[in-house]
Amino acid sequence: MKAKIQTRFDCDLQTFSRNAVKSAVHSYICKPIFRFVPRESVPLPAIFTKGEYAVKLTLFGFIPMGNHYIKPEKIIVTDNEFKVRDNGRGSIAKTWDHWLYANKTDDENGISYADEITIKAGLFTPVAFAIAVVFYSWRQLRWKKLIKSGFKQIN
Image 1 (cartoon, helix red, strand yellow):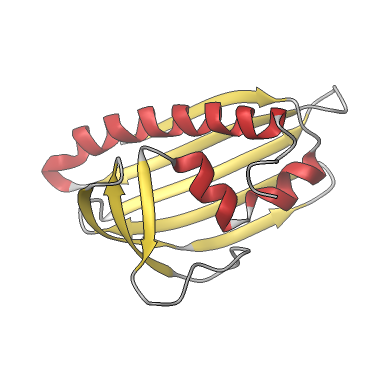
Image 2 (image 1 turned 135 degrees about the vertical axis):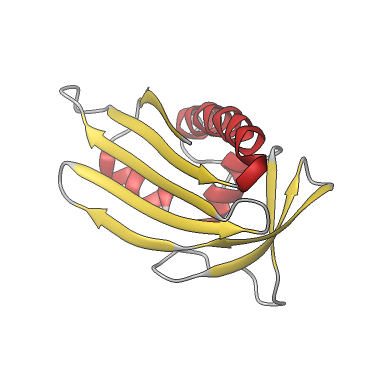
């Protein structure tokens, strides 16, 4: 199943793209719906780069959702756009293919933003899909709060 959730942020593209790859930002915008705890004793990197990061996933911080792999494959930054593909997967969702898109708008201090997600989880796909739609809508609200604060929660 595939969904695309879109919004607009009052943020310039450079500030957004500089912060979007920070693991502290990732943790902030995902709380409290998902919590990602590294499976190894090594913490997540401060800045996500291409690679694969093994985490334990919990729903609301206490419902175990098994292992998950955050796998940034593409990170594209230009003067007009920022996009990332996290071709993740996990114990429940065998495919958790997430594209994040941010593009400059006509307004110099704004960007259009979208989360596009493809999920395959066998019989659990409809439930995983419903959770994902709620989750990415929530993330966008958390993004707006973080941007409005000038990223104070993570700096």
